Length: 119
Image (cartoon, rainbow, N blue to C red):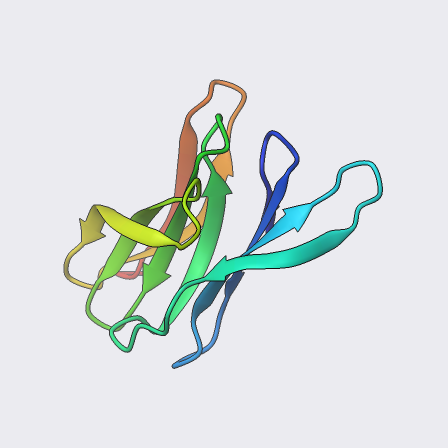
């Protein structure tokens, strides 16, 4: 779960085989109130689950990592529209790496944790 840098949105990635979903809500920093499910991703049978979520520094994009048995992806969602439409940013091809948590750093870059499955 992450709150956008401008404090107006909250994103949640759901984990669970066959139940992966990303949901986007409105967020009020003054009250902490979460409201108005803005949109959610459709079920994707090729993805076991969504894991990491992070907003871009300008709060206009949401980045999400996914995992399946054969490949992992890093996706970018444009959240300025009414629906979440994704674009692939990077594909981890052979299932060797597990794409994980995302974190926006003070330098404005988003860093991703990955797990090398050889060990």
